[in-house]
Image 1: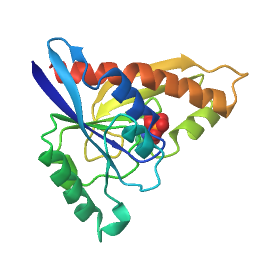
Image 2: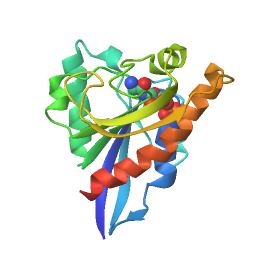
Image 3: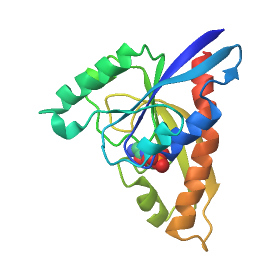
Length: 191
Ligand code: GAR
């Protein structure tokens, strides 16, 4: 059977990585099998490292602090991703700004916890929670040279409830992420 290979990049707790491993790794879809061929992390203290190991995948740690420039770090990412011949790279909470060295060499999609183009950057959940908007949501988009600015593939939103605190809001965001992201990965690999 045809195997489609994905590389997953993460920086933190790795719950989306875990969800991808649970729902997609070595599973069959539309006549192909998905394999997570590598998990790459830039943060040696990330909680996601143990989650990855629990699925038998030893993550590659590429600490951005070990590189003199963003470009040098990205070169190393590109080498690792190319080595495992990933068809698609999935950014699941990967909190690094990527340079053209990466963008021009790697086909990647990113998960972002807001309704882009609103609330770009690393504080999207808190900023969107505090905003006057009546809905919150998430976006999956192609990775481009503009931070959180690539073409949108899919979005989901929910009604904000005045009784929600930041914790409830964040939980709702993650719940939507766990539903949407694996489905989008399958769709993108099916094309
Ligand atoms: C997710 O909410 C994801 O949308 C966000 O980081 C979190 C990672 O959680 N990504 C960004 O903010 C990208 N700008 P996880 O490590 O538990 O999967």
